[in-house]
Length: 188
Image (cartoon, rainbow, N blue to C red; front, side, top):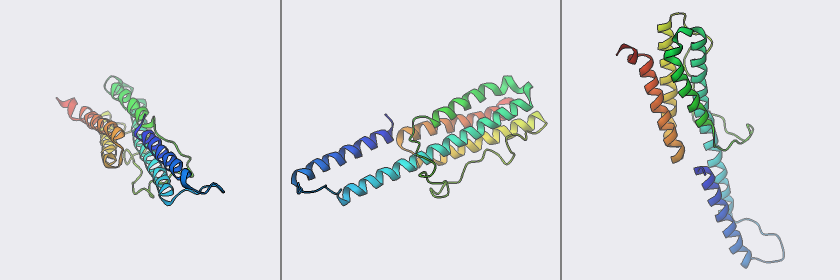
């Protein structure tokens, strides 16, 4: 069960317990209105769930952008396959892991990146389809995209629930390693 799932269960349980206790002492003549504390707890639970969903979308988006960059580089430079394909497979697993298991509220109820104070991640200044003709330059741009995605994941750590923060930290570290392997690692 994810941290958000546990929070939701705890909030629901606390609300049910409060309702049961209040129900014992309230007037049986009409429907019971939730207390201010119950309403505040429900609003806080919804806000937390929306913020976590937005964080997950940003993290998964940064990884998908990197994955698109890997795909574009491999399409433009098939000779790099042996070097890049294992890293691409790792990036695909990261994108999948970061996008799984979280709440997915509808787009209309989800806050935008601007509303949550976070900028939308971009892998590089070059669009995913525009890969340099020079293989070395393509690898440098791919390494820059890996660093950018790694930095985006690192920036989200403090806002992430503990379970997801550990995943983000692991993916960020892997992204930094990918950047090294794509540039410096080739020289060693």
